[in-house]
Image (tube, rainbow over all chains, first blue to last red; front, side, top):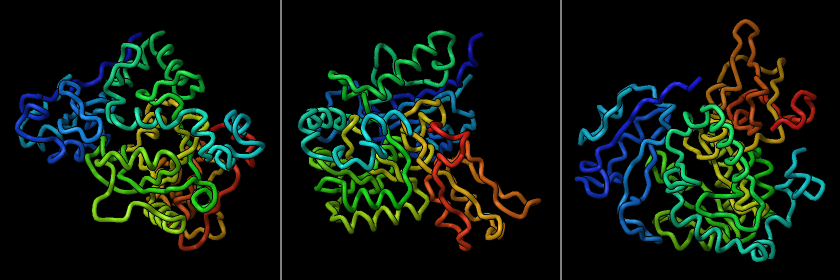
Length: 86
Length: 289
């Protein structure tokens, strides 16, 4: 009756993102390694948004139902910030 | 012919109606305000809550019993909204259609309102973190985007005249990018994009979730069996999986139900074996976009 649950992909925002060690715009490795492109790069909703040129960015896994759990993003992340689980 | 041509096409295709490009129309519907709000935080469109829910794990949500149906119905209603109080931050009334290169050239050469700019593609930026200048915008939207530095190419000319815009769209199309024309919001037309699947936000929602953010083109590809030499080069260009090299037949076959009629496959063919024919020629495809 209920559809199959999507894989859980989480990003540790203490490592990557507006409060992390790296600006995701400079890395973006997970965005590019993912064939189905499940990640979205966006301005951080937790910081005051600069409407002209946002300075704080983070990545959110959005299209989770398309994740194949190939683990390429986990391997490619230089900060070890991504976890993928069922 | 679909509803949008009936309503906004003046007896023809909706995107061939000059009225839909005019500044007067844009001003009458206060498009400037809408576009400014829409574009200043476009990357948030899948993240922010819309009626209490985000697009995160949309695939799962759409498959839920009852809730999924309601969700799909309200998403389609939003995408096609022509109401007075459209919400720019959820891109109400923003959808498009695939067009072949020839029609894109007609639009850029004659119909598009100046100024014409070419800016970094929003979708490739949010999906891949890549800045590629390949979105051609015009009319009021140009002025709105020009004020947002993250979309404006540095060191290259981004304001284009009509001939330059045509040359650029030709270049993109030959690379294999699919030309699409966009209502933003319906019925004002102000963009021709060069899309890739699955990076394009519109194609993503259409192909992966079946939402009508992008309509199939007015044409479908047809392979001339006498000319086709079964090299298979065109198959590598199709973003929709509509072509297949049938070794046993020694030619390429087209799945017209998957074909979006973009015509990109034609650029790969050395033997001039692929033509675009009107979708209407196939009775089974009439009205299927």
